Amino acid sequence: MGKNGKTFVLLLAFTVAIFSTGCPGQSAAPANKTNTGTEKTKYKVTFIELGSVRCIPCQQMQPVLQSIGEKYASQVKVLFYDVWKPEGRAYAAKYNVKMIPAQVFLDENGKEFFRHTGFYPEEEIVKLLDTKQIKSDK
Image (cartoon, rainbow, N blue to C red; front, side, top):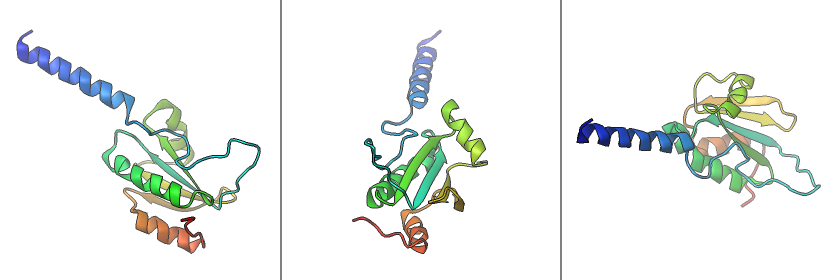
């Protein structure tokens, strides 16, 4: 194998390593803080993002998730599931997701009240939350 071939193999291996580990700070855990004690918070809305850390529009949603999680921490539970990973595939099936990113909004009883596919700007999410009379904590 020549120099160009070795370079290609190394570059390919490096790229695979990066994409297989995902982006730092991204998980299926809630984007906002959760209670670790015995108290239980009753969220008015659960905002579920179904995507992948390797999907560019999904990556663009991450700051939106973080911001909503911080601004509405006491009222909105924000979850992210990477549906391209084995542990996230069940959520894609559960919510019947065919395209990503997909956002599913559940009311306090766990009933879906809104769904969106594609990048969803924070301003539009805020408008949606306003329809449920949910105001920012900040």
